[in-house]
Length: 272
Image 1 (cartoon, rainbow, N blue to C red):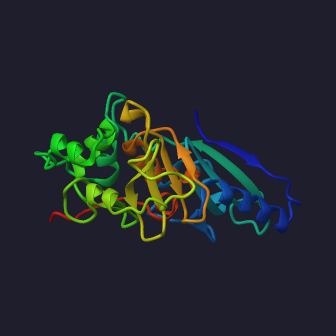
Image 2 (tube, one colour):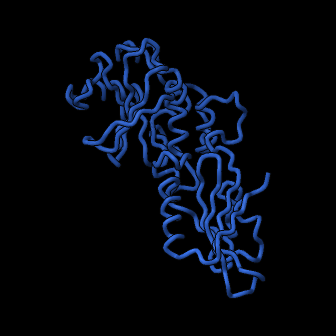
Image 3 (cartoon, rainbow, N blue to C red):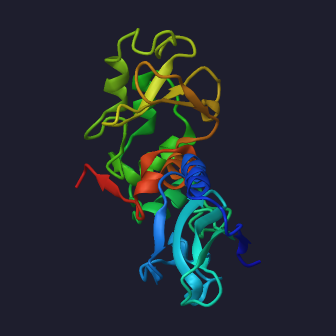
């Protein structure tokens, strides 16, 4: 199915369009300018919203595009009549968008494999963590999906935005971090190893805190809690670390900066 084009009334006011642009921005973050002054950006690819340009040809005057989950959304103006006419009218265009967190991989792919595809990372051939020793030292088993991500990536940073804590590795050591976390760090929530205590697995210079809420017998059922700063409210995500990282990087609906500020994603290893 091709893109759907909605031609708005010619008398749609500038303030109305600005309001619509604001709403789209609240949903999907900062847009990409796909066309300006009748010139379409030649660098636009299928991964950046090319489908939004296809219905218009020479009549396109300007178009801003957003990626929002399974859709591309465009807002702009086309020529009113011939492509060279002076009059224009506003349009909204919606096109299908493959979920970038799947990265074109089979449905049987793990989230660690999808995360490698998103970042262009070649997974390690030999995992460096002795999980039995690390979990004994920490005093708890850890979620399987987190273990798969650490085995594939090792210690490092995603998009220079989120630092991954790993057991007994370079950079941020998850075991030492847990031992040195003050008991009142997450008040009023308890801190691990207290019952249902919060255990931090990620960090960011932007003061984003990423933790598990421990307590479930199966660590794979630990929810992820995230807050913007020490005074903020916790937001809960009922998924594993691999899925959360993939969504953080690609899903503008979650609102994390890498999803709408970066066209290409990367992982920076601290082992190299």
